[in-house]
Length: 250
Ligand code: SAM
Image 1 (cartoon, helix red, strand yellow):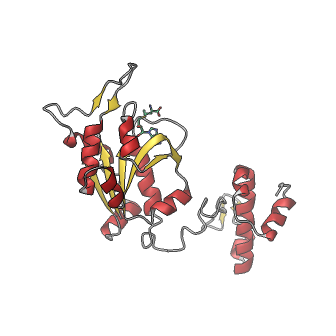
Image 2 (tube, rainbow, N blue to C red):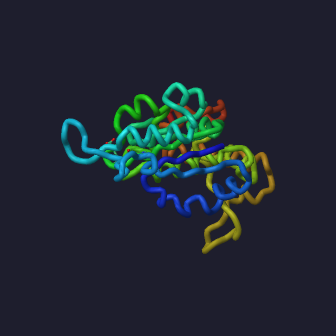
Image 3 (tube, rainbow, N blue to C red):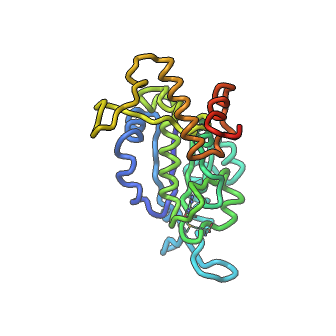
């Protein structure tokens, strides 16, 4: 998969992709990440990328020409129709976008090319959103100063879901939010730490019992922390019985 990042602050990305799973995915040739400075696509001697808002008010707005120019350059295209033809998703990071979810990350992990547009200041000229962008993604209901960290979040969430990136292909199956539940708790050696012991069932060697305990822990944890998730989770009759035994109304 190819990620093209469009930003006014390319330096913010230095080092971020040089470690751990994303780096390994790059080295294995599973993903490539290209970073483009929007300023390189600005016209004129001063390479201006933003301007005052029509209608007045504070703050600056990112101009359309450099962002259209940058997207069309990375897609090798001219205009909206060929953006669609190129088969790429042109994503604007925005607090007004669809909230990023694990399901969305799974869907994006099946794409071949994602272009990530990082806003700054008051955001981008509305004509960019209307005529260039295919998706708007928010990483939460709060406002950051720029789309760079949200772009990193999207890349991290998507990359680990691409087949071949994680050593164990089943590693993500039980992750929180994959099936609508939070994941069960984990323990490792030592078996006793400061008097706190690992639950006995995990030492029993009885695989079926461990699977059942983990399922119940995931259900309990979701009920305690994020009960609203249970409404959309895929639950068996046995799951519901267990939840009812905890007092849940399912
Ligand atoms: N004035 C805009 C509004 O109220 O919707 C906020 C602009 S924000 C200061 C500047 C840029 O940061 C946005 O264009 C966007 O790219 C990015 N940004 C801020 N918060 C974000 C979030 N929660 N998710 C994704 N991107 C965000």
